[in-house]
Image (cartoon, rainbow, N blue to C red; front, side, top):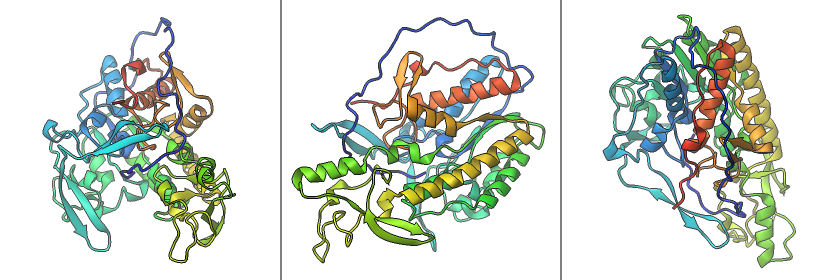
Length: 438
């Protein structure tokens, strides 16, 4: 998952604070690990696992990662120390991130990038690939193997430690000399329990690029690599919990700036305008302009300032089929259907392999879709999937807030308790914040 620069948004929900209610005391079972050995817990995954938030990886986000929250609860039943590859206090802002500065009169947010106290050490040009941002190296023990940007497709690729700066900082060698695969890296030291949330980026990259900047991982390849990864993670009889791939089309990144809202804003200045035009997938690799519908999803970073600006031939941007909104800014209905088809296949694989290896499953796909449809009340707090006001998703519209990560941690714990007969206590979600307001 990548950093996302926010531009402008339309019709942000007005309710920005969750409502609170009285809390009820509930008798909980005595904490117990049952027969599970939690002495060395490791977390495998991508940016969500690392604690990425607000378009960047930074120390505060790392400290509130869902694996860190899980580990704190596991320690109540005999779990061991959980060490993360934290950025130092002096470089606490890591890669940089977005900060909420306030709101415009129409309710749209004002954000600014944080550019001080970064951990960026340089840029490495890689021929045939592009520039790789490098970060201050981390040395020492590590239990959180979350690597922003990694796909399941990358876990056996030996040069990957030279192409992803977040992975490069965890390896002892300097790019471009690294040759340790991610799968070998995470299994190099003994461990007793694991969580695994790989696979999201195998669909997310395609979706967030509007189907134009990435490809969906082949279904058979996904199944082969997932089988391999779980076989290595369970090679010594370890128990663990895995998560399914969420419905990536349901996140705020695709549901905040809508076709209807953009059209309404245009019509205020030009009432005669009847439709927006997008460059949409027809079939295969064929695209053609057509009228946008409410079922087409504009991305959160869509630059609304471009609307109506004429091209060299005088055709207004987005308002004429000869100058349509580019595919990079929209996930159209055919691309949505394709993405969902692949995600469903990935999740069938994940559940099948988990069942064959007696692993717990957090069905993130079902859980997050239910939150989007019905909202969620946790610890007396009303939450939903709305951008900013919902409390769960951070400013990039993809990753979670500390409160969102606490919710995910609890869903993992519920799955672990149910599968293995444990009584690991749940985290107090109300003690973790949502989006930080100025």
